[in-house]
Length: 169
Image (cartoon, rainbow, N blue to C red):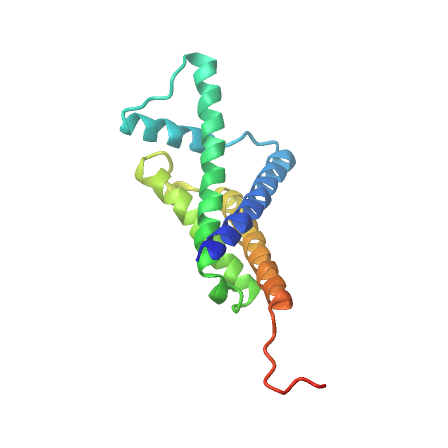
């Protein structure tokens, strides 16, 4: 089980890199600003926990931005760990289906808390907003599953084989 979690964490880290690359590419192509929702989520969660993020003005905002990015990495690695536990199933399904499942799970795991905190309301999102969120999460799912498949393939290649025939002399 520890091995599955560790492989999943590594796959989730790779998936997080793919998600970030897709997000930054979208920002560059459309010249859009970075989302403030991760920083706002951290801010609200810290306040609810009675541990507000320290600082004033720009210093505090910079901390929130950093903590928001770190929370995204933690979510990606954590969701990857869960995917690692389901690797036997995910690696048997068609890649498109397993990538969509992992990507949708990651999207739900991050968007639902933001919705519950009142930071965003997906019912008001435009098609462009949905694409800006869904496509990077699909990239996350595809990379996470691809890495899990690579681990499984490597383990099968290097697994000892048991021969039931007598050894030749």
